[in-house]
Image 1: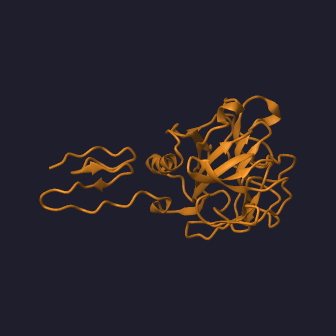
Image 2 (image 1 turned 120 degrees about the vertical axis):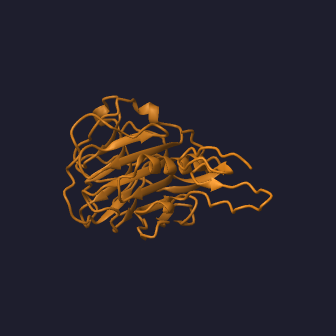
Length: 281
C-alpha cells in the first residue's frame, strides 16, 4: 500500500499521493485503482462572480485589439468595449506569460461592463495576474461603479504612487488613495505577479502579492462604498476626479468572489494561478 503526502493547499494525508490542491490522487494497487480527481478550477469554490482569463473567451478585431472578454463564471458578467476614451487598446498577445497569452496595454486601455459584480459594500475577494509596466502614475486592474455612465468609481484596485511619494497604494475609494504598502513602485513592476485583495464588508482591505499572507494595511478602515447594487465595472481604468490611472502592462487573469474567502481557499486560487502562469508562491 502506498503512503500519502500532505497537500500543499489543503486536504489530509491519504492512501495514495496527496493532490497538490487537496484530495486524493490514488495510486493503483493489486485491488484496482480509483480515478484521479480533476485539478482545481475557480468554479470549485462557491460565489464566483467574475472569471476572466486571457486564454479563453477573448474577442478581437483584425488588429488583435480586444473588443470583448467573456466571463467564464456562471454569472455572465462579460466585459465589452471601452465607454470612456482611453489612449489605446488592449491587444491579445501570445506568449505573454510563458506559453500563455495576455492582454497588453502599452499606453492605457479599458474594457467595460454595465453588469454588476458584487453589490456595493458587500464582501469580496479579488485575484489579478498581471505584469505591471509602470506603477508610477497609477495602474488600475479593476474598478466598480455606482453610476449608470460608469464615470465614478467607488472601489478600484491597482497600484498608485500617489503624488509621486515613492510608495505604492494598492486601492482607492475613487476619491483618494487609501493605505500604503510601504513598498516602492519598482518592486511591483516587470514580472508576472499574483495580486490578491480581500474585503469583509467592514474594516480594512487585506492585500498580498504572490504567496505573501493577506494583511490589513495600516490606516483608516475602508467603509466609503455605501450600499446599492452598483451598475458595472471597468477593466484597466476608472474615472474619478483627476485619478485616471490607466493600466499599462499585461493582464492574464481576473477572478472575483462575492465573499471574503478563507485563507485555505485563497491558497487554492493562488496555487492554481501560480502554476498556470509560472509565478513562484
